Image 1: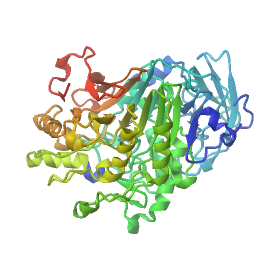
Image 2 (image 1 turned 180 degrees about the horizontal axis):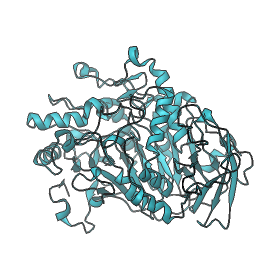
Image 3 (image 1 turned 135 degrees about the horizontal axis):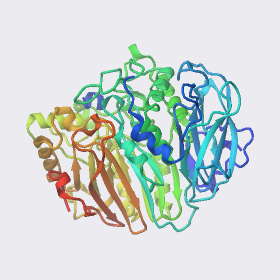
Image 4 (image 1 turned 60 degrees about the horizontal axis):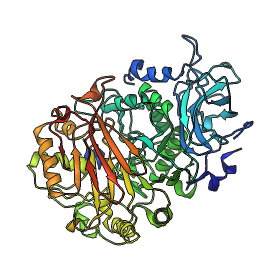
Length: 594
């Protein structure tokens, strides 16, 4: 059964782009860069250990060409199935993006056990050069709320019999079923050049996750050395140039997929993804981008189409680039506990306002979602019967006013958030730059008494816990329309990187205190750390643990992470810091409001 034949209504998934064909022949079942100012790959030791622990050992003999050198992945879990992914390197010199490769048949297998003694589903797919030798079989007929192991096997050609690493995946709970808990990892902003992907490595060793959620900036588009960390480029981008063509984007994704930590993270659980701007170019909007020069880099729509095609080839997402303009917003359900709405905040939006034209920033017709997506989201929120509505949201929705700070600190914060140094209370690339549309959303939530909405955000390379005020000027008296959990970056530069200072420096602490003092709805803020966030959802509460590294851990392979801060929200309430036994000495300087 191909994707086009899947019963989407009963499967409880929607995609506003046409589905990727599985090519199945015999299934048994079914400006941040201006704003935020190969090399060596991560050592395999720690990251690959987690895959090996799951039984993930490729069948290539020592010295033999490895067909599955970019790993395996799964994504967009349904109650009865999941999307699988891998790439076939059919010959040693068939590099990604070059249009090379020998048409190769691959068998996929799914088992409840990692020894694969019992195969509950299998089928064949064909890897072809027109999809950069990637395959994405969309499997159905599985049991809900069940963990499975999967693998791929070459069934023809010179490397017949070679087996991929083993991945682990999990289906969603059945529609309407009682679910006691859901747990997932929240990621954003993984810049290859800025450091090592230790956050992915840490996640890959967890056994308690239902899925991973990546809310954007999975790759960065810049040329080698143009945008890295405070110690320069830890490892160099491929290709060396800024990526503009389909070949360029494919090569960049291929490079990221050689990272053992990222491979292990993908193999550990299914992923649910959306893009932000750097999957195309910095500060992308519907008709262009800040980091695109038409005269030198060609037609923007052609560039965007190439970027979208590569994204959909290389990530386990149910979408293709040319349906309805390449939009990827969609909904996934997890029993009666969660409705997850994944937004696309780039392909519809109006151009970001500039400081000189900021008087027009509050026009009613300015949009980030577009009318079609806004109507879709409003419908999902108003008809949801789930205990919690979660929203995958690539840029921060909470309002932020910039406080008066010393010029050096203000300049760094301006780079990080995109706020003008003069103190204008708008972040042009985020929801602050689309305030009228944000007000319509908040009014909808407030008027319809929808008091169970949690926004899951990335983009700004820092950790935040925010109430979303109904009226910022009268908060907290006017109440909250939801809460926002913002994860920090995997590696991309934050304030200490921009200032080239140690973590937990006085300037960062001053900025954190000043922002929270002026914006009372910000309950936690950490400008310096890298890592990810673990979110736990129960019928009673949503709980977040921010997992961070100490002492510039992104510059050390396999640096450990620790739980830096926790926060919790209950239905109809704001978000507050939650004491889960964290030793205050581990993060003594960090600000937070109880």
